[in-house]
Length: 278
Picture 1: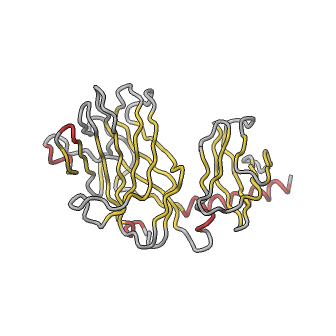
Picture 2: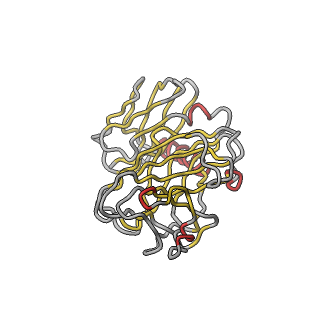
Picture 3: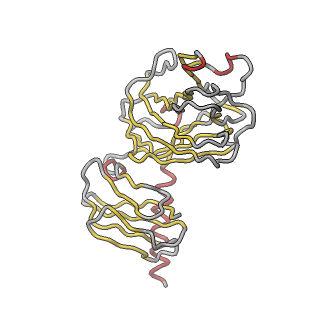
């Protein structure tokens, strides 16, 4: 029993350290979605975007984006796939277009998504921002044309402008929704989160763990070819519930639904991440 408490304490410390290191880039005030504040092109393509100044959030070194959120005012009962694009920027967006595409993620939004919801997602492959990056643009793209509009949710306040464009509605360049006349509160909720990378932790933080939440099999991938020696899953009470060697696919189908800690041991050291079993 004492051993389990010690193990739980160590894991808790490690988990808190990882969590506290995470930084969220947000130009919204709060995350409550306000009904009737958004704007969208009915039945056409829609692009929603925000520019972030990394230094405003204390990011001055290598930074890795691992997750994000966006608001949904209404989905109108239609399943959507939203593409999240992250671009480099020179700081003059939208006067100058975004630069290089740094990474992308397709996010499924079910038809049953309630109004005024926040959608959370993880980047299957984390996006590493070099120390030379000063600004980024995060863009949401609804590319499918249908008979009803998708409305990205907005908050009551923002600290910088959100932008919209839609070729189908003759908005072929990004602009401030307030300039359209009747949408002064279209403060689209678009945020991304990640971790500042130290020299030694860069390689380990490049490990990609997906899907998370997971139903059956969780995958461990590394773009830097880091060798995974052991993978250990602990319950929140510190009990080892699964341990495998030299494998990057973990069958968790027999685990009960809940929160677990996954410790990955590699040639470069070890790292612990929270996983959620559906």
